[in-house]
Image (tube, rainbow over all chains, first blue to last red; front, side, top):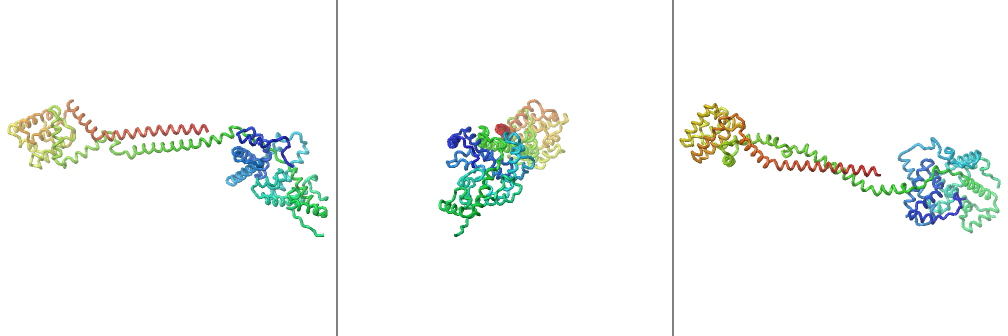
Length: 205
Length: 329
């Protein structure tokens, strides 16, 4: 369920080393969480370029604020900084409206072949892109608060407590938002006739 | 059999293992009995499974931090106060420089900022206007002082001196109108010139007459000369009035004779250029005048220019330092 690989990983020692000023240790943490952070930023901003900027700003802010980390879930603490950076970006965008980079090109692997997985077959790649497009459309129908909770818990594999800490909401709020989001997603997916067969919900129970 | 109602929140929490053990057992029992409830739960499970397959976007790049990227903002924060102070100091010194220079060029139109010659030119008309109405007694001391220093060869008096003669004459000569004419009227009659001799001894009168004759023979008319002197022209004639004035003070006929005899050399050449000795004396007096009235103002002006110069150097230096610091950033 988790995105992160299960390779031997001593997060606490790296965090402690980074707190002592070890930039290499912090860069290892960045490599471990950068995909998570970028996708969370993209869910909030819906713009690859803005998500890119927000992610970079968040990692710099996290390095400077490492002294304030008092233990607990480093992932939740780091993602909280990403969320803050995204909100700052949203405020800045509101002050100075810009045209989304998506209007011209996409920064993902379809538009940047060098970023694509070389071992993936073209059909699989196409199917994956199609699925992502569908799910993004469905997720876009959700309110932002529900979308963030369902993305963090169901896609990123955060626990309820981590999601509550990341979004700074109560645990009960996480539960209720997640339940409403899942139900709405279910309803929307059942209405999606264009969803590939293998991904359609089957009422065969 | 009582049908229990389970909402989506409980089903969702059941899937995530977030239900309390007792509630979880009750829901598990209900699921075994209720097919519709099982179907609802499966739909939720498939939704979650589909979301877990949701392809994430690849990051467009790595976000690895470099020492420069991390250290640069800290250096900026450290330099910020320095730059701020430098900019403030530059602005203040520039403003002070502009104010000082502006005051000197605009507000410094006073006497202190003018060159000495201009100051003298400004003072001259005032002296010429004030002298006739000035108290004679007050002027007497100055004329005496000049007389003491003046030698027969150096009787030249600064341009302001001729105005002293009319002021001095009223003291000794009762006919005030004639004395006034002596100083003011250019076409004064010859009798007016003889007024001072009325108080002199007879020998002195004779000498004076002879001197007048000599003057007439030399075509150097005393009335004209005195009138010119009264008008402030730089002529040796003021020397005559000085000597006459001294005679009028009543120091004796011999002195008066001496005075009249001393008058002649300057009168013989009224329009001639001043002798060297006179020139030196005049220069000396002019230097004294400057030393008394102009030196403080001149020193003040010099000080202001020096302050402006130093402020300008400060402004340029601080501006350069600010530019250098900004560029280093």
